[in-house]
Length: 376
Image 1 (cartoon, rainbow, N blue to C red):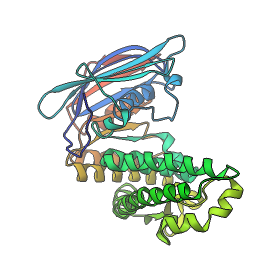
Image 2: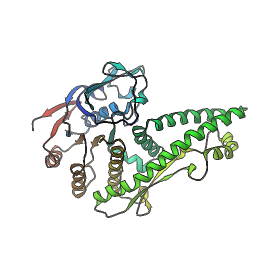
Image 3: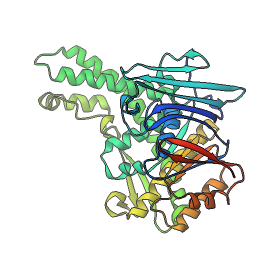
Image 4: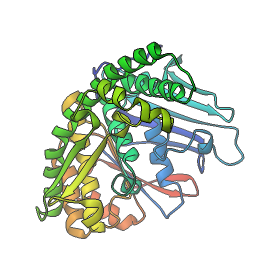
């Protein structure tokens, strides 16, 4: 079949799932609630791996940036993930199979998908996890990945622009390292970079402008309005056209052997009361900010598509005090959220919180990659 993503989104609810030889999961067959699903268990038992498998179904890759091969269970030759989703008018089954030789196949209702990128956005998802800390502490590359991960689910043309831009940058870098290169060809490449770079810049700029007040809103709910947070977008293209920047830096780029200007240097700046959160924010403040960032992502994706994405909350109660935990669950209970998956090592805490939110929920316990559905 031909995968399409033209923003004709509709609610996708994961009803059943089969996971085989993915990370530490030898074989798991699970049925889920359309509302809240809770997975409890100790560290290393497979909670996060199950969340990652659900994420994989949506994004065609692991959330941890691990290679497909690294996701194959030790001793196995391949892994497979299959999910039965309730779509707009009928159920639909999506199946991934990845072999150790790198072969990767996606099938929807027994019809192969030709391009993985066309699947992105069909099953929208938002993941909140401990690894989000890299968005604050690590380099701009992590924040650019965040932008791409969000915007590619909202806009298939954006993803195509990013893919084309990256190819062109690689071509330009290769030419820069040649002793003699075709100037006219370099001009053509830079003209194409200008086209795709401008489109990416405009989409990121627009998204950041709507993201910042949304993050501020959710942070205020979480923290009780104790601090003011803001998100700003920094880009070379804010001050000049990419074509001008590339022409001006061509000689320097030849010496260095790579392109020093462009949207591959973009960044998001996270501020709290006017100061960088990375430098001045406490652990709890940074955790609250990151949750607010992801909830803002969720809200903007829902607004643009008209349907709520699947929400994956992996160990979100860690490092949050009880007030902020209560505020977080109030956000989930009080908003028009769709299907939610929550993991926590503390089963009593998890059930105590969720039981107060809804009666429509399912509980699983994780142990050594096995999942047992518990009676309510």
